[in-house]
Length: 275
Image 1 (cartoon, one colour):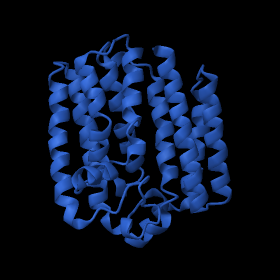
Image 2: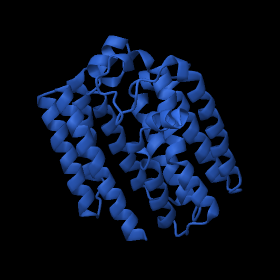
Image 3: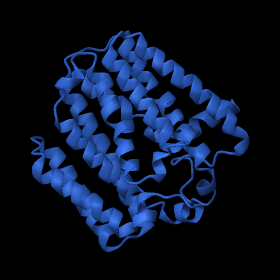
Image 4: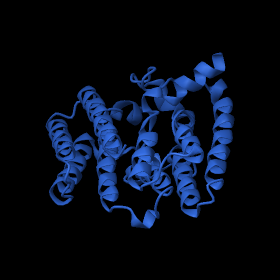
């Protein structure tokens, strides 16, 4: 029971639905229906994938987590060093299971998408690459953790990923902007721990400015037909602008939560449309 609770806390349940939602929306968008293989992948992209993402992250972010006031149950826990080996072992087992789930599809696009997803998940936090400390590669890496591979995994069940709507890549840019913005709220603990995040290297205002510019350009040129998406982009632009004027970490944390939960509204809306 202790081990189970540890795994659940480490996996940050609040983030379990991100990849499964994107996977499911894109699966239905491709014209496919759920079958036993796609259901297995859908389940594996929830708790198991989150445990890999945040477990590996917490192992290699141990120093900054010690002084991060946001490390509570919602945003994970401070993973004790005595549990590092246990979490890493479970993560390796889950990585193997995810790869097997992709191999049994006999779909090369699905397999490649899964390998790309797991590569960026692991090396986002782990050395020797550790994208997390290589801005702006950290934000680009997040695109390959949360958006493109999960979308391709779902879409591959019904169509070729090469036929995917270009707007998925535009949406991915918004995610990159969001993750640049997210580094603002952890600026102080990351700087004390020596973590080279975007905000630490370039400053909180520059992070907010880059996020703002990217989102404005997407809003102007993407030409989304769904008004709900346009309202969402305007919300992001407004919140980024406020932080640009007043780069307060606690305020940035509140705005992060607002943007994150509004993403769920949009994702469930599209899921409703395709179902």
